[in-house]
Image (cartoon, rainbow, N blue to C red):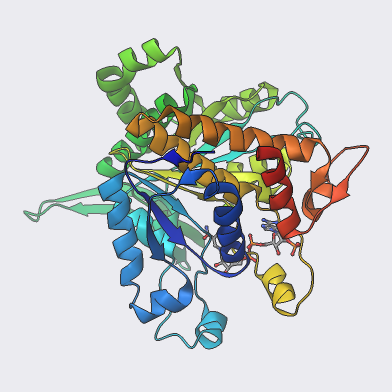
Amino acid sequence: MSKIKMKTPLVEMDGDEMTRIIWAFIKEHLIEPFIDLKSEYYDLGLAYRDKTDDQVTIDSANAAKKYGVAVKCATITPNQDRVKEYNLKKMWKSPNGTIRAILDGTVFRAPILVNCIKPMVTTWKKPITIARHAYGDIYKDVEYKVENPGKAEIVFTDNKGNEERLLIHDFDGKGIVMGMHNLQVSIESFARSCFNYALSVKQSLWFATKDTISKIYDHTFKDIYNDIFEKEYKEKFKSAGIEYFYTLIDDAVARVIRSEGGYIWACKNYDGDVFSDMVATAFGSLAMMTSVLVSPEGYFEYEAAHGTVQRHYYAHLEGKETSTNSVATIFAWSGALKKRGELDGIKELVAFAEMLEKITISTIEKGYMTKDLALIADHPDKKILNTKDFILEVKKNLT
Ligand code: NAP
Ligand code: MG
């Protein structure tokens, strides 16, 4: 069988622990036998990040900008324990944070559905993708505890020294105050990333805020979305047969629960934090969630939503058998290959990526799955496979 040829390299960001092992195994068994893989490899494993003073992370993000499509393995975000464990020079920042800061993107998380795992919300038939704005609001707030009676004000001083004051509250006792902000450019990027992604997957886009109560703050989000949609995307959405739908956040929640799914739900930072966990849980498993970072310029970085599965890795190091779910990492690869194929006009690559996804799902639907899924799947004939055997089962079906 002749292998599928690629034109542009895929930016490959390797990672840590159990997912690093899965990564190599997926490449060896599900990608390289079928594709003449062209990739530009960056080792984001913690040891090499430390060795290069984290320059490798920056280089990999710049490569993603140069080539447009990246696939990333889960990586350790160091904490005190990791600094000791890996004898690090310093507590390096989260690679995802560094990459996001360079690409300036929005993260889209979508569940992978299999028919033997029923969503807890019985009306949901198709995936719901959450797009979370990743800048500002309460995540960059300033908070203050009022201990004595007094006035809290917003003071804005412009660069010429002019001052504007707004009363927040005249306290006659104890209380609390919070100041938060967002940026026009960040909200614009968020909107464009969402519109671009909706077009790329041909799904409608929903967005919601509380603009009736927050007449300036939330309303600005609504207005920016609306302006950009009217000026840049209205016609494109029409030709793609999808729509942009704005509503209030409480109405959105009610509609999401009653819906069939099959759309993208853009959320402000806090809403996205809360509702992505709700949606992931209701669909079944973190190990079945994919994640893609989309920049406003249209660069894509695909990954699994879960971490490096440290507990399984330590078991593996002790020589114990593991049953770690590789589905989200397989879908990171298929997502990136499909996008590469679309951008380069390689139909075989797109078809292969779609086939890989289909076969992975049908392997599970035939009853072959890892332990995490076996615990929640409703299937009459479950066969629990270890980490490698699941990938080999997919390979057998794919071949
Ligand atoms: P985790 O790796 O997501 O794993 C947490 C638990 O969830 C696991 O112990 C396992 O439960 C279950 N799980 C997650 N993925 C699974 C899979 N593919 N198959 C089967 N079970 C799975 O989170 P963590 O243990 O809190 O974090 C470990 C490291 O990952 C940390 O160093 C963190 O910094 C990093 N992290 C990276 C990313 C990223 O790169 N995007 C995201 C999150 C975390 P059981 O133990 O019950 O089997
Ligand atoms: Mg959260």
